[in-house]
Length: 173
Image 1 (tube, one colour):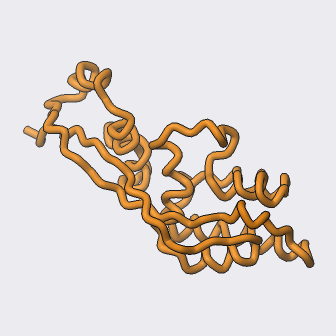
Image 2: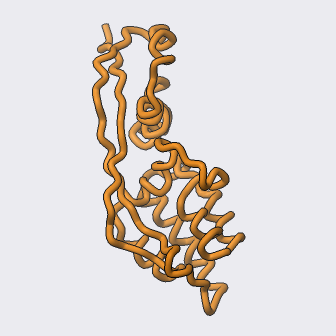
């Protein structure tokens, strides 16, 4: 008989990196060196915490390009990056850098953000909790799913795409 499925919960701990960018060159420079946990945070962190300030963008880079740099075209290109389509965070980093490099190649003087609007790189550490809930078979999910916290949904449906080899959620796997 297979092992019972363990229901997990999680939280993201935000860690300041001390890296700030005020223009695209600085953003690209920091992005090429920053810990991959920062890329994770700026793409996935908003899924775990309720956000009202940036509902149209799926990542923090796109929102900053729109609001701090006032670059609509760049914000749209960055907003189209779907992290689930990349094999890992390093591949996503390279795609981000490609978009930034392309934008930089078309601009001799890239725009600067105002002093009070830098892009602040934050890194996340995922902390996983065992809820002690187990299900023996798939139909048991129906009974426990209504009690799922946002962290449980995030861990098993969103973060799982990064962990599972085939890129699916934990329940399908």
